[in-house]
Length: 322
Image 1 (cartoon, one colour):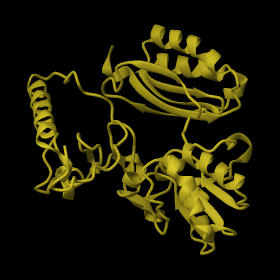
Image 2 (cartoon, one colour; image 1 turned 90 degrees about the vertical axis):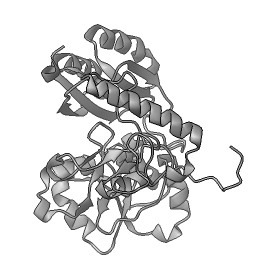
Image 3 (cartoon, rainbow, N blue to C red; image 1 turned 135 degrees about the horizontal axis):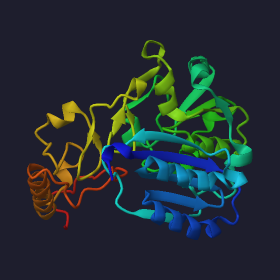
């Protein structure tokens, strides 16, 4: 397979799919036939996925999904891939395509009002509007909209508890945003289910905003974390300066890589103090194998697509048991 023909596609669509489990066999067969790899989540509330392969094969899978009238409006974001970002295909049946953990939330009927990226600045510039970042702490740490509230969540399902702990939000205009739109739709539907009347969300998420809003007019500060090998992007979706710590999976910038606690492939300032000798030795050996493979112009067999960062690793007390 020519690397120049490879693309990756990210997509989601909320729709009522009570028969979602029936879709799995045909999707499994088509992806195997077309040599398309990645992950597709199916649930009663819709579909969510990231897949990669030859352009014509990826588009064949997308066309198959859209052949269901309930998914006909499914949109996707497409980008070229220098090499295979995934090594196997997983079609998974889930309770939710993005896990909030609150029964009865329906983005199809309850989602807030879409706001086009071109109109977002005017909305969040209104002093009466409360802007909430629905992403997790490691994402917010490297960039957010000016003035946005950071809930300091480690997982999306912690957001409802944060909202419940802030009754002062009641009666306010709420504007919510996320990376690509899926968490915005789910979170605004949750807010409306809780009695919030004026709830808005950024259509297409941060990525669409950075794509079309000129940097000179932008209210975005920093970089946007992305769940692929780029790690972060800036305005015009240019690749950012961040890499991932291969131990804790936290995004790390140039200043963190300059720290004495940073060792490539082993640790960073976020996890250095929490690694025991056994773990450190294992990571060091893995890094040695990676560097050996690179010196031979080979891909390390343990290489995986960019995963979700782990929860923050807290240092153990000096006398803690291993």
